[in-house]
Length: 84
Image (cartoon, rainbow, N blue to C red; front, top):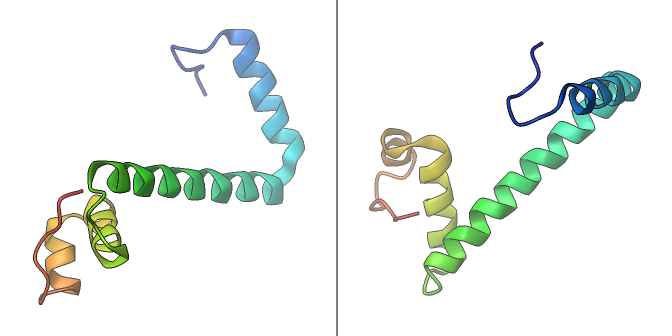
């Protein structure tokens, strides 16, 4: 795998070695932590942009970001689209 453009070759090599040493279980745990961090960051952004939203509106706005308009309309046909 090529190193990202914003990462030095040495840093990329060190990161690759760290991931290798983690093993599959460790990499999976790291992945789930990153997913949770991204989810929390997106929700914080929604709450920051829309302080008037209750928890339901935040959930619908996040679903729109993750699923897209078509799926939100399919899953929640009785709700309008909520701006993320």
